[in-house]
Image 1 (tube, rainbow, N blue to C red):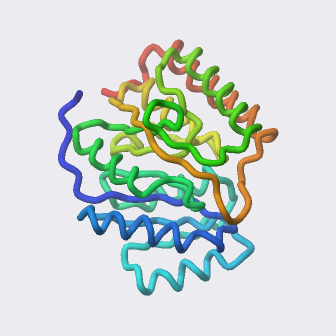
Image 2 (spheres, rainbow, N blue to C red; image 1 turned 60 degrees about the vertical axis):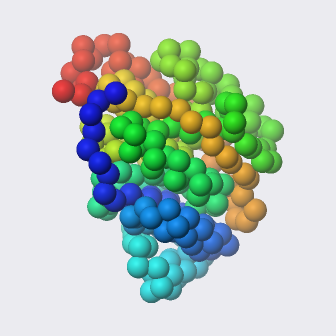
Image 3 (spheres, rainbow, N blue to C red; image 1 turned 45 degrees about the vertical axis):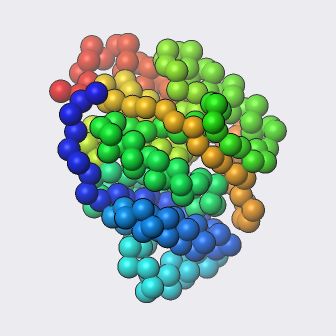
Length: 250
């Protein structure tokens, strides 16, 4: 493991599109747990073209939660573009990407922070290893998830088995080292970790908890994402085997 500096500020990036039913509770739960664990943090919630009251809720919450930094992605929109907007706005020396629908556990955010402070440059959570807890995962999405992750593990020869999960943690230098980020949609969740691994950053995998949303509508559409995941996997695969190390960390 590389010697890494002590972290001073954690940035949470939360992309949100039409999440008025759950976003405030998600932000408050995350911040309360981080405060209780004395973790300095900022929360960058990115409104990605919402048509409901998401932005109004963020503006109101900002007045009582000083750690909240609402950002508007004026367009073009897309899950990946919203995350990039948040990454470009962050001030922290580490970042955790988490979902607006409260599917990710705040306790796992603390776990990620602690693991980063052990010296890891990336922390990847898995919902499919011993010790993980998964509640109400839709069956069709589960099958598609396991097939996609098996494919990624096979072609990249890695042991990480939940690459498509958005909930991951990185030191700032990893994000900078993975640029440019080119995925406009959910395929960004695959682009960043695969680039980080291929480019030589250290990483660890930990079991995490996940539960299905209880409000709002899931934004991931499997039939729309297949070719996009395939494209970004091919893009990083060609870098791994044909770039002759041009993009490997120096």
